[in-house]
Image (cartoon, rainbow, N blue to C red; front, side, top):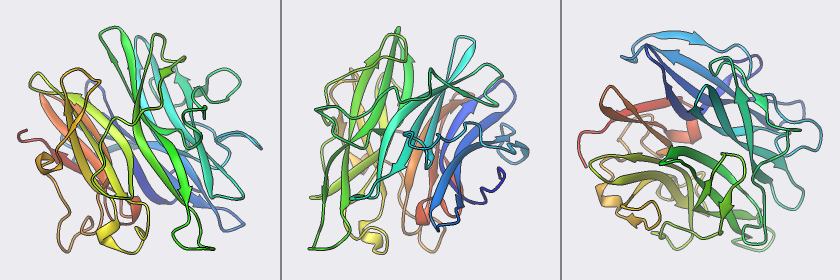
Length: 302
């Protein structure tokens, strides 16, 4: 683990090289005031995933300075290789007073093979709240397709107290944006995935192309009582599209679910799909939001 970051391995995200696979993830460290900071780092595996080759010693992106959008953590981090550089799209966290947190999307760029990243510009976000998306802009997943950058991300809809004086809980949905340069994004603040639950939150979209169709996995949960009630905890959802615009949800075809008496018996969350040697794989977290590390699944049919 990176220095001081010794718990959790949240939101694993794969980057495939010629002879190894680098998995970026976010660990956490506890501060003097009892709060946590999220630190992005990576681990390198051989392509059989049975041997660790390297582990980063320091965070790959520095957290923000006092008052900046990523002062209190970066989680998740999504890496895209584009031409001769590596783009890191980050979800930066900052604490609030009336509610727990806010998020914005940042960009950092690596010119040393994805070992470390320097923030773009002065370090501010490239996507933040707008009149259509008032808060909680985060969870970016980016692909470069047919000459355009596509980002799937989440935006906040509202904060609600289930009962008076309770801590407010956040609602967020998945949206889509496009860009010519990967920096300036066009978006409309529209939710693209239908709800299954009456009080549903959606997070961490990941998209891949397979058998002439686009496929998305994501995680979803109830907005309330999700930390201690496994029935309301994160599960993996699935949707498909033929045009990257209209998405049809069909969770029954996801092909994966929680496992009894295991590290993912109560929760499955934070998926990331990638292609390796002609196969599609998915990384994901299990119980307690990544406290016990991450797992790997292989697609055998859709």
